Length: 463
Image (tube, helix red, strand yellow):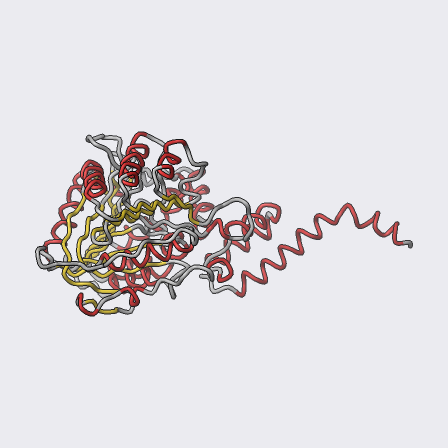
């Protein structure tokens, strides 16, 4: 047989052979990565059964903590940003800072008014990172306020996640740059120069003013999250304005993120002198980052440890609930041993697939004796953990695989009685507009819904 004849026989199958070769190579890489068994199985299933879909999906979204993509990003080391004079101390997960003052933002109106006020009062710098900057009236209003400050000589940096804020810079965004501000996008999606980077999203939400005050929480910038007047359709969320020594840690996180996204645009140097003498600054707050730029999964590990050490009660508020096996088993054990375990999720979130995927986990918790509450009026986007009425947490992370193990996230743990009371008050308000899982959900599920739930749960590690 001649070479020409052999090529004629093989050529129609070259695409298939290449596809299987890629699939084999990816499976080999997948098995070497330190993934949880459910995550590995989900990727194996889609790569083997549907290689023409699974292979490109893995190449684009399959990366978790990919060293080659993140090696140019400075690792987050909050201990480097601490100051002994500010009475900070390192923990296994982050930095515990004392001498802080807090103002909790329970509504979208409070969040909007506080953001506008802090922007207008800034004297030296404004540094904002957000997953979503909506192209609506609220997004335009905030950018206009930033443009006014930049025009007045204030150093303004706006860091957007490239996927969450997908799209070209609009005219009103370009106005900010014309005024002297700077806009950068974190981990651009196109072109696909580095395979797997589309999966590594910056989900952190921070607004830092003069390096001394910071707003964190679950809110993005847009009318779904905030506005000048009350709106029944607006998503419920939670946030906090912090002034004091903890802001040093936010500065360190933002600096590392900005230098990775826009290395040619410097962050101006300024003193980080947090004068707490004139503040009612007696709050202790533990700050931690999580993501490919941290060692391990500190935020997840802190959440898990806090729940495991609960002696009386655990309350979790989250828009999406897709826990890993360890977290789910921990909650089940707590419920079965008589601890009061309460979970609040929206009746319907903005992601139908995650609602289907969570059903199995919710039923498991109910069967174990936990209280599962469904927020009825609309979308709840808040992220809150409260344990024993002694420890509370909020930040940018949801209780799902992506937030806990893939995304760049930020979390803050609170210990002061007044702060705990603020958390309890917000949770109580949310609970008043909720119904129990048993009352709201029909136990007789249709056959098609059962199939949809099973398929969705199988794919939960990929969500």
